[in-house]
Structures are given as structure tokens and as C-alpha cells.
Image (cartoon, one colour):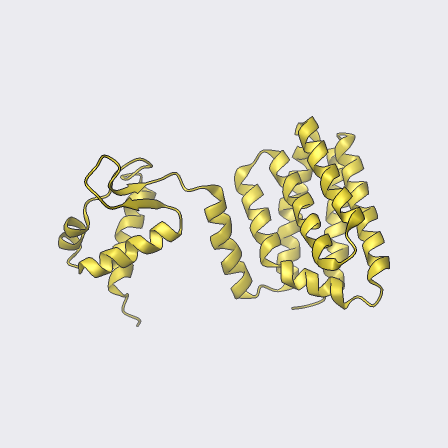
Length: 231
């Protein structure tokens, strides 16, 4: 059985208090010396654990003696969650079928809500992404605009968690999908097909037809992932 490293015990202690609600955003953590004495750990182990939490965007540490000094729990920005998740998805090499089903689940949900909740600025953002796709000649530029389009739909749905999960999944498989684009023997034909599919999704969203938008985005995802093949 693997023995946890010293800093992992410190991490577990801090995480337990965060998840239990004992420590909330804005609360100040005990000083390093106090945490080390309480847990029977070295100050080096405490520092290492705090560095991990700071990298995750959970705490902010500042040296000094002023009011802002010390280690404070901060409201973790959603992008911090997305970055961590994207890294895990990228290195775990999930099967294409798993990624496809996850995308369908999240993006159908988002398309249905976005069609009802869309604003004028949402429509402009989606249109701008489509315009970039129209101008993109190489797969890399097209892929960036493709991601921007799908992420913008998720954002318009108004569910921050689903939006970040969508972004994380898209960013984690960007390389795989880009390779699939570049491997196509007839990239111009594929580009035109993808442009048309995105325009159809946009039209359903603009018309406020959530069911049609969800159906079209699912068909688009399944069709493209079907071209990628098993991982």
C-alpha cells in the first residue's frame, strides 16, 4: 500500500475543511508554523501543499505583515477548474466514444437553453466565429474558431459549470480533432461541410428553436467524431 507523502496529508487536511465549509472564500488559513505543528508535518511539506493549492487557484498567498499578507481562500475562478480538468482529460486518453457521448450530453443541453436565452451579443459572437471559419484556410485556424463557436453556445446557456466542462473537453481533444482534420484527403470539402453544419446550428439558435439546435449540434458532433475513429 502506498504511503501518502507528507504534503498530501496537509492537502487532505485543507481540502477536508474546504469541502466541509469550515473554511470559506475570504477566510485566512492558519500560519505555516501552526499548520505544521497541528499536523505533525514539516513546514516544507506545508509549503508544498500550499503551492499545489495556489496553482489550482484555490488560495492566494502573500508574504509580509500587512492586512493582505498570509494565505487566503479565494473564490476559485471557473477557468481554474477548466484548466485542471482539461489536463486530466488530455493525459488520461479517454476513448473517442466516451468523449463523443460527453460532448453530446453537455452540448445538447447548452444548445437547448442558448436558443431560448440568447441575447443580441450572443448572436454577434456566434456570427463572428462563423465568419472566422469562413475565412480560415488551414485546419488550425478553423479549429480555433470551431472551439470558440461551441464554447460561446455553452456560455450563452448560462450554466457556468457546464460551460467550463464543455471548454475543458474541447481543449483536451483539440489535438486529436485537429489531426483528424489534417488527415482528411480533401480538406477543402470537409471544411465546406463543417461550415454548413455550423451555419445550420446557428440558424436554429437564431430562430429560438432549441430542439432543432440540439438535434443539429448532436448530429454534427457524432458525424465529426465518427471520422476520427477509435482512439
